[in-house]
Image (cartoon, rainbow, N blue to C red; front, top):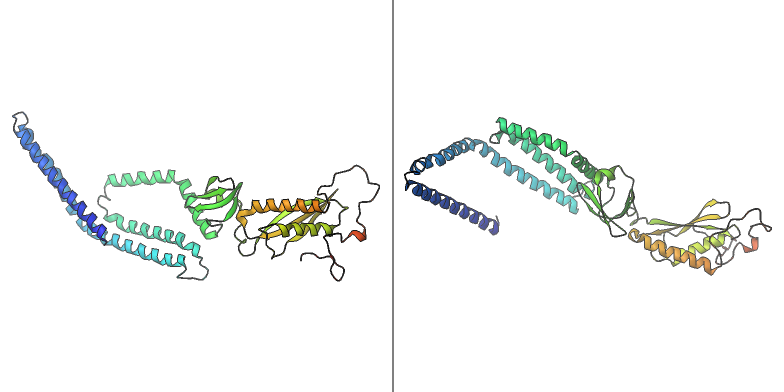
Amino acid sequence: MSATSVWTSLRSGLKFVRSTILAALGFLFLEYALALFPQTRPIAWNLGNWVLEPLGTMSTSFAATIPSLIFLAPLFLVVRILVKLIHRFFDAVDEGRLVFDRFERDWAIPTYKLVRLLVVAFAVVVAYPYVPGSNSDAFKGVSLFLGVAFSLGSSSFLSNMIAGYSMNYRRLFKVGDRVKIGDVNGEVTAVRLQVTHVRTIRNEEVTIPNSVILNAHVVNYSALARSKGLVLMATVGIGYETPWRQVEAMLLEAARRTPGLLPEPAPFIRQQALGDFAVTYALCAYTDQPMKMEAIYTDLYHNVLDVFNEYGVQIMTPAYRGDPEIPKVVPRDQWYMAPAKPDADGSPERAK
């Protein structure tokens, strides 16, 4: 016991003694004042009975409940000590001092809360018959009313709570992750038992019920970004008259100039479609900074525009009616136009 707890207990005891003395003095003064007048003298004579009889009844009832209280007190202490031991055990798991196979550290606190709830519920069931007045009709009626009220008003509460625990064990995300939940895109700032808080790129705080998240499509941009990198994709359409090797080399140059993109794994190009008027190219590059996706995308688009302007290649090809007089083909002598460079064996340099 700390010194603060001891002094708090002493102050509470002194306040109780003072209140009792003041109440007794007030009662004696009232009885004396009422006895001075003939009209109120009968009240003074019966005042003691009116006050002492209820106190006597309360004392008798309290004495009858002493055996039950003697049982409840050790039960309370045992449950409290058991909960503290369980808390310390799961704290050690959460801090990494205890390690179990196939049991993640993120599961420690939610599991502790579930175990604590089960222990307390078991203690309540054991203690119920020993609670003073538990066998009375009034106590049963109040218990029934509270149970019905809780059942009617807690459907959403229970669904969100169950969803919150399910999210923790499924490891959908954690605080600090960049996620997209439905139409909400932002950083997870808090994961609570009922709701999850997400801060969007507009610095908006969005509160999402956990039951909604459990039934929604969740994209976690940060889960693999730290170890394997997050792929950012920029798509452009280039006309058939531009050599594809030149286009790929320019896109890779734009990725090289963009801060925030990783050199390893190396960026790569995918040709997605041969359209009616243009070839669709997709530049794929890795980053380990999912929280800066928008800024990196902006820099990447800037560099794509700059590189294509430097080499005189227009990104969009206008549509036309009918066939052109000169076929839109690339001569062989233009296959390796700058900045494309062939390898020693004559094949173009491409990202693997």
